Length: 177
Length: 408
Image (cartoon, rainbow over all chains, first blue to last red; front, side, top):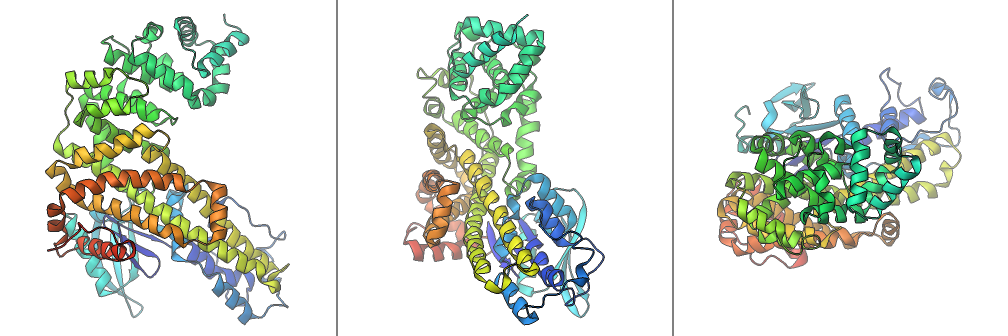
């Protein structure tokens, strides 16, 4: 049962927490893809490549687009206008929620790449509040039921959410939190 | 040595459901010989055979009534694995008529996930076989996994294996009340042979096992409804996004325009696929293709939840199921007319809703009857009861329903 949605990406159910951030991260990457001047591109693989892999729909771009990315200019479109357009097609949280409906294989791929998190309360190992860059965060160490690996999930601290997670965790008989 | 023509003839007659002594003899001989030509033809047509309603129904009828045509199935063993239904039929035949057969229980359980129209009638019989002959294997390979893997399946419910939850529940309702066996098998077994068998043999499940089976079924079903509802909402929004991007003239023929357009339309394709898969998952979980299946599920829910221990353990799941179904029903009207027209192309949406409401009415009936226990549980001031109560209150303002739901 879905109890609460936090920051449009953490979905708190009564037996597990589900969180996903694929659409959001692709969206954040779009300006730098379109206008390289806005941000410098990092060396890590692009989120849009992951998105292409799961939708199985290749992006038709001019040949050598990624290599010559810096040379493209958009004369007819101002930065403000572009930002506004992207703002309008801003992804909703619900887009990320339905990633649950992917095939098991693709879903596990997203889990192992760190775009989706599934945290059952019974497999939480520890639940702490930490400080990171002047920001208080909730850190959950847990075992992922799909990949059977131990992972850490972090999100911004808020007393209400922290207490809710603690209460639900205790309810399943987990004494680690 | 059978020629290709003979092989085609056998398959054709099977697909049409003309099962008699002669054709079964020929089939078994070819399977036992591992005849290469025959297997090639079979392989080409295996999907046709799987989907053929006539074949599945006639085979099941013949098995239940000890038709001499299928008596050759005894001792069939591994050869029958080329056609999964034959393996299941052999197990059922040996169970109902007391003939020994070479059946491996774990392989038999694996054949359960081959979907066709009558899967939901074969599988309870398969579980009955395993329960009677190998109770430890039932506990280890079916009852314990549904407990430990419940979260995996409720997070990611779009898989064929999900039908095992439904079939296990159907089996539990049959042995709780053998009268339901007559209801479930009324099209293939008008004389009630299966009911008689269940009444005579009296297979038993513990109360906790009933509770777990019901919990697993309700949990998986309601999380699929939730996923379906959010997929509908996402679809509605992505169509709006698409039209907004396409109407933006300054984006045309620019690289940024192409990237944004690709992003939005790829997202739409993803949502559309999810919608389609979730819908078919809902259909198979509710047994919407056969009226007797969802009728049995509805009555079975009422019978099993009737036991106070099972009801106490399943209050959250039951209430959640009612809540999700009604939310889906009320949210249905919110979508724009474009979305509705496009949805008609994907699937007829009202079918699933009808069956879901049918099943939900079974749960609601029991909860209403035992409203004392429910209100007692809801008065607990802790999560998730608090949120459940809030959501119910919000919904009852919209729909004006649930007068039986109270809180102390």
